[in-house]
Length: 447
Image (tube, rainbow, N blue to C red; front, side, top):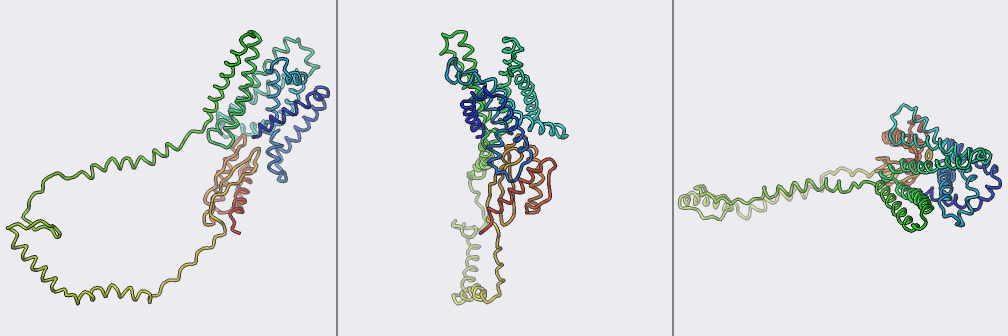
């Protein structure tokens, strides 16, 4: 998971570079700004020569905001650590400089997705509730981050009274809460759809941010009543666990199997219910008749029908007598003659079996799209591309979905990935769909 990788990098950087950051802050600020510009450019140009793992685990650390979010977690946890602890003594002196450096790193993510959000808002298509909420939260985050970053510079901080500056900095609590909300708005729908890694992301972010909230609340309560330290720790810990469990439950994909099973077994149940009505035995007594019994019955004839039965029996005996054993071979002969003559008849030549170029099957392909991986499953049957399914991990999957809707139909109709169809504004996703089909065909090609 990208965020866990970012947490490890952020912790190592803060622990070993914190002192240098405090002594030479502007050197790190300049390096952070240069790195932000480079990552922003690379996140927009999408060079084909860049390997996918570089896009995901290097550029993605900046463009997805994973490294920025991890550094903000370090800044937040520094204030929640117990007073006098070794981590707090090491990180607290450089906390202000670390927050400024983190804000600079955050800009690459904010600008990149800010441009995307603006384009989408003015694209003329209807905006979903999740997208509008993401835009509002992102705007609030920037409105809080920029002023707090500015007043964190020592030259500006000196112009504020200590109490006033501290009260303004408490807005950081709202900032951290909005980061968590921002992640949930993006990840919860994906987790509900069963997207790979989304459920794990929800749990990890919940543990980190809600764990921080529990630690910060515990520290505040203990400061007022130190004798209740253990009680507060238990209450805060249990509260965090309950919220984490509730969030994980809310993100759990809805089960679909029981509905299918019920639909499949419903016709069988109806059939089982109608069986007794159809097989109910007839308990009425037979009505005696004067007609002759049908052939094959064993009921003895009555006196009234003895003469008729005798006549019919005599006629049947006469017909059987006329059929002598010598006639039996003559009756069987017409059945044997076609069998003997059948090999002599001309049979049509068997059609040659078609030689297929590709193996049948479903092939999986993963490519890097606009800002995240795109996953595809392509099914090939008798040299025909029968289905193309795909989903993406991108922040705005609308462009990918539009490309799938247009390009997929064109490829299926042409039975080839070499189609001219493109979706305006989703060129990268359109090319990714075609490239995925080409790779699937390469996998299926017979050697």
